[in-house]
Image (tube, rainbow, N blue to C red; front, side):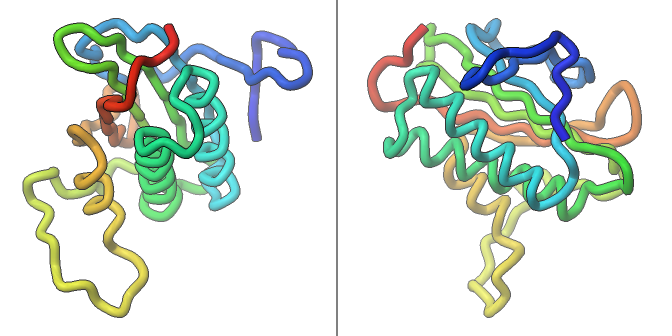
Length: 179
């Protein structure tokens, strides 16, 4: 499920492979920290991605139990669940990239990019989402949650192959992030 071509990282340490998709458009500022990994396009892969993002955020100084941590983990859960539900192509994984963009004129920001290989099923643009009266269904509100929690989000076609990347950014509001 996980592949770390750089070698072993030792017990208790997370691998930080470099992004090999080259699909992330230029970030507003260079990231001070990044985490990128491929996951199987299964519910288990989405759960693992969410868990590793939670661990990585805590290591970066966005501690468990804070509003920022919870929001970023929930955004990740929704984007990865959508990649599994709507972006699955048999035999192909999804790719997650997490980046901490430094504070500057705006607060420190965490960017989440989730890339899948299914290009014909795309989400609506952020402005096209219409909050509807909640139905009995338990699905269909994920991007509304992302809209509510993220500072901004959108998607773009994957430039180096079939598929798309859905990204979201969340500005850190609680204190300083460890650099």
